[in-house]
Amino acid sequence: MSSIHVCALSRIETTAPAIGARSLISLINAQTPVPRPACVPEDRHLFLGVSDITQPLDGHILPGEDHVRALLAFVRAWDRAAPLLIHCYAGVSRSTAAAFVAACALAPERDERALARLIRARSPTATPNIRLVETADRLLRRGGRMTDAVAEIGRGADCFEGAPFSLSMEGEP
Image (cartoon, rainbow, N blue to C red):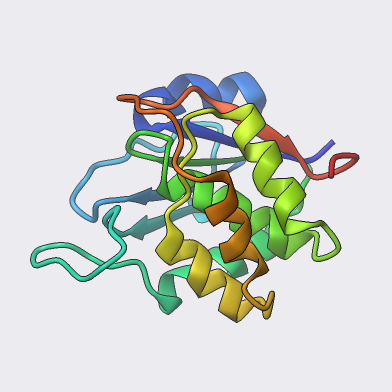
């Protein structure tokens, strides 16, 4: 069964082998070193150097269309034979947005609101980065439904680091 897993940077080295991940997406500040777990081939690791911001800020990289296009191309090339692991620094904002975007892109028939609610149920701390979601919403031609769905679940509970969670790509809303 194919699944998307989300965790914080501090957990990728234990989470990746535990779930059998063979693909990894890192959404993290460009200067942050990310150790690639041995179970993930180099060509199946997408590093997106973006800051967790929603508006331009000096010294930071605003997530943009090129980042989302790269994310979409990578998840569309994922063979789903093994789980996909997505992380950011805390496993709260950029990674939860990327998981939401990936699930919407791979299953266009899935209801955006039901998917956002599922993410909230799996992760009380999830606060998907709205800039990534808005950009994907436009690129996927979802007519604002992705953005509205994330706005509906609101900000997650405060935390230093989110607990890892997963989404099945089969049999869920």
